[in-house]
Length: 154
Image (cartoon, rainbow, N blue to C red):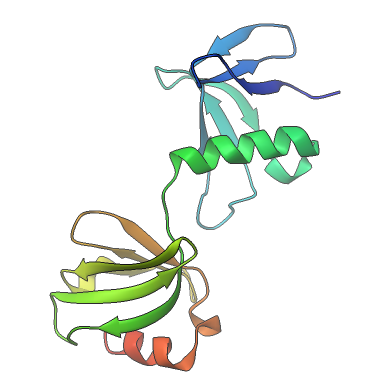
């Protein structure tokens, strides 16, 4: 038996049914730690930002419910993961970066070195000129060319 139910309604909004049968429409799923613990905890919130339900571990949910929750989370979050740096227009900022992400190849402008933040020893967050954040999950796992380009900015 599922601890709760998460489905889309006729208008495409997420609907949460709690164990007591209470139904909430227009629910938003939010990860607690999207970068450091993507499979960790998540909250289901109403339209006003009130927490309706806390899920301590996404991975512990039954498969169909886990899939629905992950879909709701992915629709809300946009954090492309950089897999490879293909080209950097200049080693001084601002510069245009061409990168391969898990969503495809793209270009963005880096305004300054301060827009690259190290979260842990191997995790970087990069903010582009438009405020979009890109993540490098494991700097050490990147190819030699990508690391060489990044070293110029770190």
